[in-house]
Image: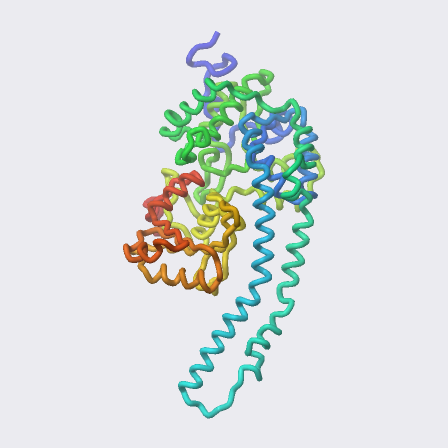
Amino acid sequence: MSDESSQPGGQPRRLAVSFAGWLDDPGVYEKDYFEQALIVLDANVLLALYEIGADARREVIIALVGVVGRLWVPYQAALEFSRNRKRVVRDRAASFKEVRRSLNEVTDKVTNLLEATVKQVVNLREKNRTLRSWDPADVQLDKSGLEDRFVGIMDSALAELQALEREHDVHPSDMQKTDSLFVEIDELLEGRIGAAPSQGKLRGRVDEAILFRYPNEIPPGYLDVGKKVPLVAAGDYLLWREVLDRAVMLKPGARYVLLVTSDMKPDWWLMNEKGKPLRARPELVQEIYEEAGARLLLVSLADFMNGARTHLAVDISDETVEQLREATSDPERDYGDLRLSRKNVLYLFSMSILDFERLLRDLLFAMGYAAVSSSPSVESGIDFRVRDASGLVPSRVVVQAKRYRHIVGAQVVRELLGAMVYLEVDAGVIIATSQFSSSARAIAEGKSMRLIDGAELVYLLAEHLGIQAALGVDPDRSDE
């Protein structure tokens, strides 16, 4: 017989057991999870199979087949996988296409820039009325000479890009029918997908997430609160609720749950001081123990493969593990040495320039811009070149970022308009951490240009990346 002082199983409640999530060493070995646990796959893990090369994917599937008897996918994860499978393949193909275009165009752009710079020297010579003779053509600094210098300079990069493309055997055209990888995943997961919740249960869980858990920052998923649609915002909790219910059904006495996910948000993970994930949030560890008497281990796909190699003797290459770390790392939560504040707020002026640029690149991608790529600074101050595929004809867009504390004036807008003409693109975007002057907005009005000020940037980060951002410096940091 149990009472309030008892833990699951009727044993007396102990700090070392009931609150093990807060211990640095909870006394449960990783080996136990890999050998005994229910292995739960998140949607992003399944989607990663479409992002990595065929060889690495083969090793992942072999590892999953080896534990197929303990494999399980929540209904929510299967739903998100089904919704996003085609998009992942299209975006991957678009990224390759955009990089190839950039490689093919970069020599012309650099040549034009160098030619213009040499022209400045010629102009200075004319102003100086110098009597010395000097002809750019004699030193191969005319247009023809510059072009000759760059012939074939990008051939190696283009060859490597082509080799990377050949590693993929699922293409956008395959998405028009049932592709072979989908068939393989479908067969692997047959009978191992959770049941869909009833409409009443679904509504209750969404209300629980949005009205109670998220306002009180109870993990997981509360960082998604800014998403427009409550059902989408509650996605992480819907998945977690399924995991809790499934854990209750496990055999008593050996209830281990190994959840494999590429979601690196701090509403899933306990972070170190640099914002890097360490292990599952203690609240999650406690909740699954209180409800099901189960133990939880949270791992990335790369760590799962590494663990399968170590504990299950699966033949997995170092190259595959490394590729998975790169392909499935969550860009939303990995910005160099950035440390989130104690309130999990991302202070934009506490970020390095490179980290801020990476954050904006991820935001653009999440907003639906395809093939987001950084542009060389020689391109008139442009930070990104993207494709907007929302219309019937994809448009080419340039983006400029301004991490200003002062108002962005009209000159910045004029410069971007000039860059748009020079680069022959269809539209432009300026993302700023401050406000735009009335004259700046007047110039942009009626043009193919979007101005995103600091307030809208904070909103977009919450809506698309689930990041709570602030336009300031982290008060918790001592190095500011």
